Length: 379
Ligand SMILES: *Cc1c(COP(=O)(O)O)cnc(C)c1O
Image (cartoon, rainbow, N blue to C red; front, side, top):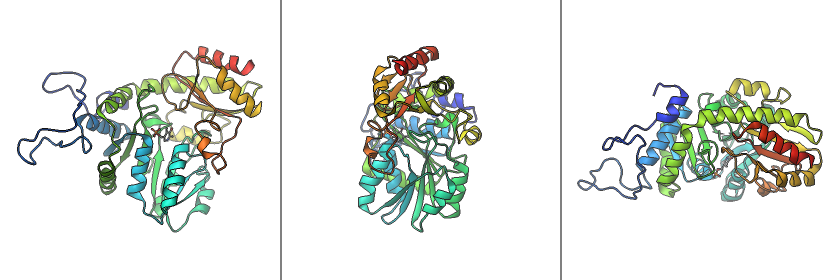
């Protein structure tokens, strides 16, 4: 489709049902498909291999990321696992962010490393550090930008050039930015990955994952893993993400606005030591984020000046912000990464500052959100 993003978010991969005219494509709750003759069918045989509702989702998200191929999974980590299996062999080495999503780190460190895959966590926002960590066996770089939970910004174009000069793949976890704010493949990445659980689903009611890419051969290898290992989303999960994606653009605009206001407010609070938000002019990645992203996103982290105990207490005191893991939905969430989302990284190079608080700023009225945070900081 040649249409703009907002139009593709609503229409790509879907059209009214041919038999009934239903404007919303039916959700295909079926595990198997009738064949006219042995081996003669309408393109679907068994729902692990393919399901029409999954096809709608895969086409829609591929269109939003501006890539030829889309593959949907039962979770973001199932998508990560499929990429690692398809792209790497034992003996290969991968660079991951030194503040990678905790589950990505656990997957690589606890499942892949014991199976003979090497990895190094590095600050990928610093190209000199990346260069120093490079080995002959480095076959892929795993980038997150903005990173979680430190919200560092990495230069996708520069890292892609470095990877391609050395025959390695670049995969970018675009969960925080979403395709509305940033399209990594257009900037040179080979593969884009999402936890659709977050902004794409957008309503905290589904767990899912997605991989998007242009390379036909790598697509076939990942599709083989998708079918052979079978971590596929069910039709209801696919439907929920398709529905969520329709409002992605309007939701992201509001997430960005609210997060910007909250980052400014926190910057002027005495009980806050430092605010991490790429939209602040003081953020080291601000200029790069301006170039690489359409907006600065809905995630805000900050270091509580009162240390770990004050940070933990504050998380329990908000009333509009819900104390919970996850992110990217309409409702605002607050969490303590060191004890929650990043607890699995404790004692590792990825351990986070215990005074850090992470906010997933929702799309409620921003004055209510600001009053809620002020109240929790002050009491
Ligand atoms: C949540 C998340 C994942 C993992 O996705 P699941 O759907 O929970 O398996 C990966 N990367 C980032 C940045 C995430 O926030």
